[in-house]
Length: 110
Image (cartoon, rainbow, N blue to C red):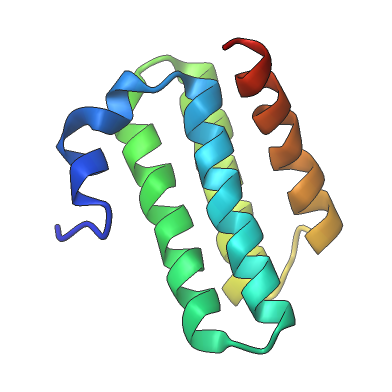
């Protein structure tokens, strides 16, 4: 598999805490939402794909069930919201609020 973030895929991602990983994913989610609002589909799609890539790296990095379950469900809901039918009823605000909590928590632990 070819990763956009080759350095992260090579092992740097595993060195980050779970909170830091989720905060980084949140950054890409924010970018995707912001570019979508600006009607720039190319950049929006790129950020969407990077968020999925980081979620996949997180799934590969963790073996404990609660984290795997949370990331897998988040990935499923993200795909549903961004390119599906939004069966879960997500909103841009709900995505931003969800990931903002990880950003605050990751900063608190520094």
